Amino acid sequence: QVQVVESGGGLVQAGGSLRLSCAASGRTFSSYAMGWFRQAPGKEREVVATINWSGGNTYYADSVKGRFTISRDNAKNTVYLQMNSLKAKDTAVYYCAARSRIYTATSPTGYDYWGQGTQVTVSS
Image (cartoon, rainbow, N blue to C red):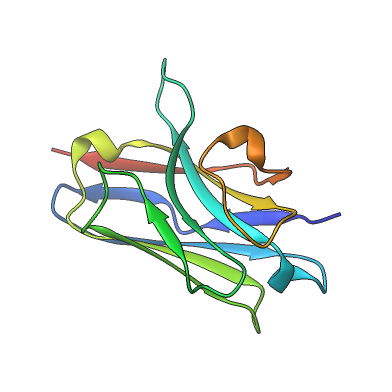
């Protein structure tokens, strides 16, 4: 069993930056692929970025490529999402998820453990 807890959300002006953190429990964190997803009101949950067990392989949705960076620190059982050049359309609840595989997936159904989410609001 893995528990994940997100933090770092908030209100920011367009063009600003935020860094989300995801702290995971468990001694086998390094064997899990991790992902960040988001869900805006009235929309389906969508992938934002994923990272494999070592951090050597990452994926980004086209909408955030070049602006967001996912990283992980296995010694701290933590995954990060650095978000720069934020836009109003990035407003959503952001979720961290853990996958019981070393390689990533882009579908939410490929992840086994989810956090409660953190709200990111970008004002234009």
